[in-house]
Image (cartoon, rainbow, N blue to C red):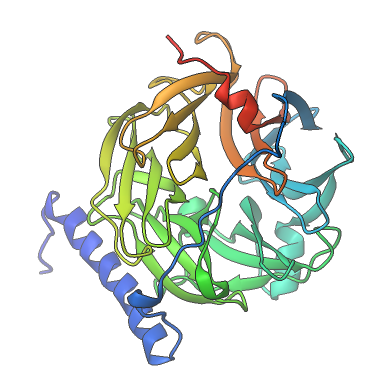
Amino acid sequence: MQAEIPKAAAPRRLSSVLAGAAALVFVALAAAGLAVPAAEYRFVPGTVADPAGAEPVFRTDVVARGEAGLLHAPSIAPTGDGGLLAVWFQGSEEGAPDVEIRSARFAGGRWEAPRKVTSGEATGRELGRYVNTVGNAVLVPRPDGELWLVYVSVSLGGWATSQLNLKRSHDNGASWSAAERLVTSPFFNLSTLVKTRPVQFAGGLAGVPAYHEMAAKFPELLVLGPDGALVDKRRLGSGGRIAIQPAIAALDAERAVALMRRGRSSAPHLFASHTEDGGATWSAVRPTGLPNPGGPAGLLRLDPDTLLLVFGDSARRETNLTLAVSKDGGVSWRRIARIAEMPEDAPGEITYPFMTADPSGAIHVVWADKRDLTIRHAMFNRAWLDRQAELP
């Protein structure tokens, strides 16, 4: 008779199996000469600065509207021609076969009409296999001007059985290559998802924050080579099965901080992890003093001394987007402004913020507003931020 695994031991045993599977990825990559030695990890941190004499700027607008169903999980990135591109997924409901990834371009101070990028059917046709639906998508700008789209697809089941795909654009998102499957796990290559802004490494490497949802939930950092193939993956923290969707900001070449969405409702906080070796290893995941209602945050380095955070400042519901700054590497935070809010008891949600900056120094936040089925955009600069007083 087969021995029964005690209930308390089963999660630990499964976690050990998953950790072993992750180790196999690194061993296989190292054997193929693909894994990057830890000593070679170096972040390329960004700085956000206004032109001299800039006046404060703050504006909001609508990227896209829907008449029914769902518009969700927007991402935004600057393009090589001085514009911006936003992507999101849209359909009758999350996980439905009719879901499409759509994009819109921001140029000349306005958003152009959205266009379809791909769908489950189109992705399946390009991969030569059945794909039921698509989901979260993240844009990855490359040093050579190429733009990557890393996105989630599901063939069977829910998000726990998801896989990642990559598309390439050489014309700032006007057209895209056929989908390529990203192999991220030996565990049937299942259950890797993305949501937050990528980080850049020296040597043309791209760091794509990711997370795992099959059986155990945990955050990861995928390292993609200049050709878009996975060369390494690093788990954030040891045993941190309570947080997902890491938002990462590099403080300098070696240090970075990650803030993560809660992985379960019993721990309604943002969680944090830190690295001091270029992302090769990360500290244990710990709760912060900031609440989290169950959605991701956005994180951006403004200068060597300042981090900017956008998050839902509630432990109950996604009813606001709040900006906070840190002057000590993410240890403490000062709330300075709300860029969107609604009553706590009102229907709908203000959800899934994504933040980036463009080369001019303008900061951009996009999010989904479920009250009126819109993807919304806020743009502001350092001069405006510097005028904001601490919130009560």
